[in-house]
Length: 337
Image 1 (cartoon, one colour):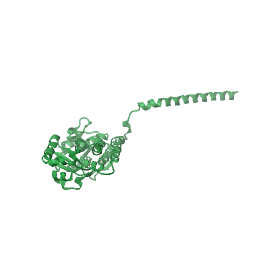
Image 2 (cartoon, rainbow, N blue to C red):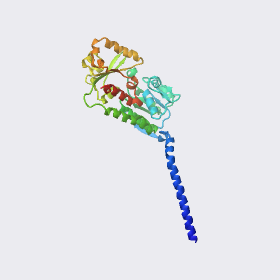
Image 3 (spheres, rainbow, N blue to C red):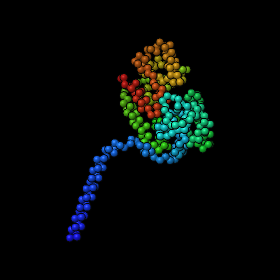
Image 4 (tube, rainbow, N blue to C red):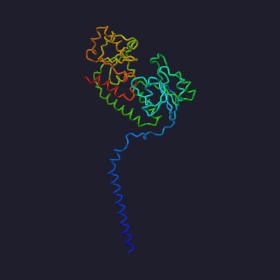
């Protein structure tokens, strides 16, 4: 009799437990959609804990940084890129705060001078634990260079890295380094990987036959220059199948000649105004072209393919808008075919 009672009790207990388990399982399944809706989007928890990162900068220097919190960026595009990678800033060059296209989010950020002549004392006063500089020369300062400040910074025990970004591949490499430092692989995916896929789609849509010819000009109050495929926008045009006539006529890169442009008669002429006064820049070119009646006979002019480009996308670094820059050129080149 005891055995029968025990067996019966065990059976009842087993059924009860099974019923509870089934109810819990059903409740979990019913709650799942609601839980998914309430889940936060792309949480910052995806970030890994930053630690020491060693990399080689664009000058070939080996640099090690360890979760830097007091970062100075000596070019506006680098300041913006560092924030896109999840970092914050204590100091920036003037253009990060004054040039169109950049929005710096870091609070109480100080300026360290124009990017062509950054102030070493101003940088040191911020007690930085990482300084980001450009390895390029020129700009408004002619032969100005931030490289000259490296010895003083390294001598003070401050990690400094030099970068030069011309193409999207350069930007991709820069952002990989930055997101490695900040531990934000999620922001690399968001601000670089997705954009790379979009650019690949645009490039993949380029017609295989009959590549258009083009000239790319930058104009400023003092004159006009022709750009090769080795420049930022020139490289984008090359990716989009354009035959840049300046690549075959190197003399144009030194001496802009309206007569030479008229003789080559490109399918497209792209113009990027530069400098603080874009109206004055465009007026300079318009006055020069108006002085030559043959300018109006150009195929690009007659067919509405004499196009002014936005300097925010095509002179400054597009950063989070590289895909928009590619798409804009593609639309001008092939959207009207």
